Image 1 (cartoon, rainbow, N blue to C red):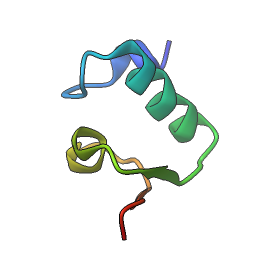
Image 2 (tube, helix red, strand yellow; image 1 turned 135 degrees about the vertical axis):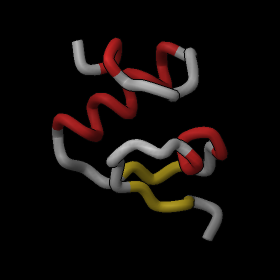
Image 3 (cartoon, helix red, strand yellow; image 1 turned 120 degrees about the horizontal axis):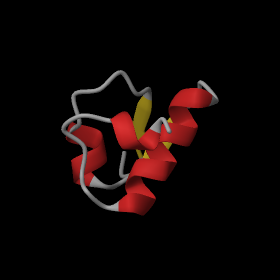
Image 4 (cartoon, helix red, strand yellow; image 1 turned 60 degrees about the vertical axis):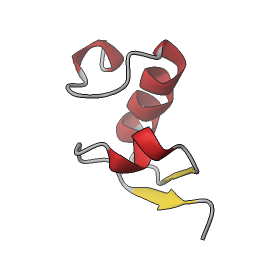
Length: 50
């Protein structure tokens, strides 16, 4: 349910599930995916390329 309500996020269903899981679990998402790093939502994330 949470994945379907994410505004302005990529249409990729796997990305949506990953982001929704990180939000529900209050986890930091470690990713190198530019679209997830640029998303304006309230996700705590860390650039894996740094």
